[in-house]
Length: 330
Image 1: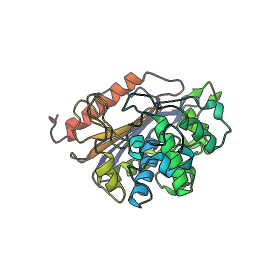
Image 2 (image 1 turned 45 degrees about the vertical axis):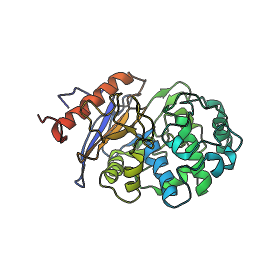
Image 3 (image 1 turned 180 degrees about the horizontal axis):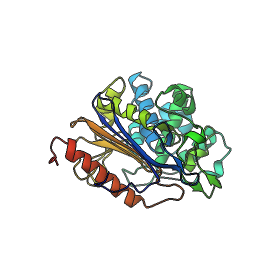
């Protein structure tokens, strides 16, 4: 990483995935700067919004595959709780593609201790905004509620059945995030995201899951080589569902667009996702590789997201120069 400088986060985990080859891994830094605990390959990372594409999107598309949902199904048709709410006529695909008009965020902290049903009702009462597309945690919270209703299982139960995800890993084996003023403690093995935290099982459709670097790499590799339901992810989720513009979305995924996401040397078929704590993944299906970056940018206090994003862009450009079919090689 000498060409791009040190990652602006206490700990970093990197994976380079190329076809069916065993991924290349790098981990370094401190999982906890207060205890000087060094990170290693077995540590679990807070996935933050990578939960959207590693949990919620695959579960939703599996329901589509099995005929239990359609992408054009409306929330009111499939979820009685959504009837007579502002989201009754919103389609599943609109929620998945950040095209529903659901606001980006809301403060749910006062709902701590409430049932999932009551929390979903609070989100369903948040009136959509005019701007579309708009990256929205709330839209994914609603997809998570729909999945729980259709499957009659909680998201936590789904996490327990998925071999590349974890729920509430041991603190001593987890990468720490923020020293949180609201919760008055260092978050470690608990989701940093406040909205996920208020749910009874500490997981919602937008955030709350954990994974090790090898687990995330295994998930990304399944996309790259197109296995099982991941074939549907490649063909449907990475297709553009929103109008042309700076922000282009597939189902859950950000696509290569005018906002520079994916680096300056990104391929036109590239797609990826981010997580607020300092995570990013980028997949280049035409070039046959993918990059996974996990970090704790918010530890022990939040650092500049802009500096972190710039570093990620330099990292992706460096990989593209070496591996990109259409990029000039070093």
